[in-house]
Length: 149
Image (tube, rainbow, N blue to C red; front, side):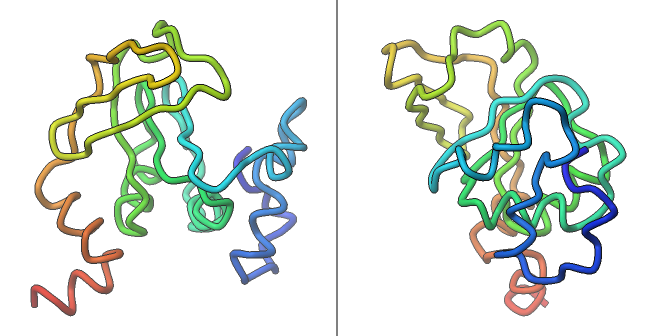
C-alpha cells in the first residue's frame, strides 16, 4: 500500500515520490501534502509487506526526515535503516496527543522526543541502536561499508 507494483518501472526517486500511498483510499494526495522535514507518526506493523525499496526511497524523496511508529514490518525496517531513513519504535505512540501539523523534535541517540507545538514530551520513543546510528551518520549502508570496512 505504500508503493503499488504498477509503478515498478519508475526508477527515479523524484518520480517515485508522486505515488506514495497512491493505492490507499483517502491518502492519494499524500505526496502533495508532505513537506520537507516532516516526521511520520504511524501505527502497528507499518511497512509490513512493503519489501520494495521504492517504499522507502519514495518517502525519503518526499523529504520525510523520520518515521516513528508502534511497530514495523521487518523488511521495511531494514530497508529504511540501510537507506539512512531514521525509523524509531515507540509503543503507544498512537495514544499520544500528537496531531497532524504538530512540530516534533527527536534526539535519535536517546529517544528524547518533544512535541514543540504542545510543549509535551513523548516518553516512549526508543533510541536508535549504535549500528543504526552509524549507518544513518554515514548516509546509508553503502557509505557505511566504505567507511568501516
